[in-house]
Each structure stands twice: as C-alpha cells, then as structure tokens.
Image 1 (cartoon, one colour):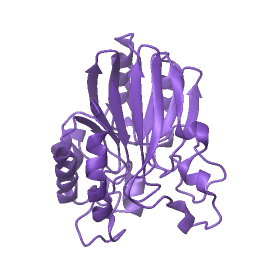
Image 2 (cartoon, helix red, strand yellow):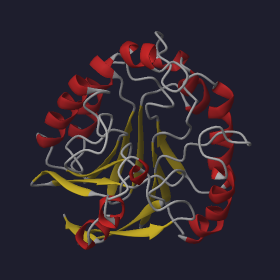
Image 3 (spheres, helix red, strand yellow):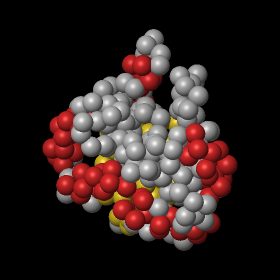
Length: 281
C-alpha cells in the first residue's frame, strides 16, 4: 500500500500575487505525482494562500487536486480556514476568520461539511482533522472516539505541527504556537494517549522534518510543494510497518532563507534520517 503526502500548495490564480510562477511549477509536478502510484494522497493544509477570504481560490485548489486523478484526503490550513478571530483581525486577507459552523465556511462548502474525515485502507486508517483554536467545531471529542473505536494503526493528518520542528525559529510565525496553541496542546495530549496513532502527517512550516511526538508516534512534515521547500513524502505500508521517503518537487528548495540567508540546506530539506526511515507497527 502506498500513500502520497503533499502539503502547502498555496494555489492562487495566475498571475500570482504571492509567488509568481507558482502555478507553472505545480503544473510540472502533476505527472510525477501521478507516477507515484498512490492508493491515497493526503494533503495537509494550505491548499491556497487566500482561500480563507476567497472561496473561488478554494474551488481552484479542488479542481487542481481532482485533476490528478488520485483519491485524496485533504484538511485545511490557516490560509484555507482562519484559525482564530485574533489571526483574522491581524491578517484578514490570508487568514480570514469565519464565525460560523464548519459546514458553512468556505472550506466546508468546497471540500465537505465535516471537519473530521476518515479513510479505511485495509491495514490502517487515515484520519484527517480540521482544527480551529479552542476547537470551535467540536472535533476533538469526536476524534478521540474515532481513534479509540478501532485497533488498527492510524495515520492522523492535520495542518499544524504539535512539537517544534526547528530551533531556533527563523520567524515568530514559524510553528503553530501563535495559531492554535490551546487546541494544539489538546490534540498533542490525545495523540500521546493513543498508542495506535503511529504517524502524525502535517505541514505549515515549509520544511521537510521528522520529530517524535511519543514513543509510538512520529510527526512528519512534507515541506511546501508550492512555495518551498518543494518536497513531498511517500509512505509505503506493509505488514512490518511504514517506510517513509522524500521526493523533490519542481519549486524552490527553500522558503525561510529569504528571512535568514545563512540557513543550511538541511534546515529546509531535513537530515538523512528525516528524509527517509521506517516506523514498525
């Protein structure tokens, strides 16, 4: 069984406002992504840059994903679904906050009304969770029930990393602490109490990283296919466990070097053990 993990596409109409040429590089990634031969693709948020305030951008992202012809499970990032009222006030264009039920948000209307999505794949379950601060959508109690209802290994998909991926931080917004600090802490505690959650697949930070959340669970980020680091993950699952590897995309190989040009390549692309490894079940 093979699972493809992409993140942070940051799709927007041409001519792009944030990163000129982004849609051309994503077009170059279409065939390589199809050739992976994945049974499922997981997309861990920030499908767009301005989708939280522009529903047409979310529709464009859905069209792009649908065009790949790969079954997929997607969750929203802070650019698709504003995480809190405070973030929305600070950045209304890119993190617009919608004070409505999830099913009434632009993301919910475009990708589906439920903030919790589940795919059963024989040997394991893939569970995606849309998270807003203070769990406005009441998804965390439901997630606890879903994870506890089955003994199969679980790949949990979210947008925000639950433990730091890099130190020191190149920017105050690097990480999830300023986005969903309380909801993220509850989710981390849930993962640590759930021995069948073997992988937490996420994005947000635009680096290719792997960090333990618990003895039984590894947190893996997949870079940013759109803005850099342009990487994606392949997870191969068999009866012995899950092997993970990294593939380079067509876009920039770094994002945070614009803030700190001295950052080494490993900051964005990860060490050897972050790029490839195995989790045994």
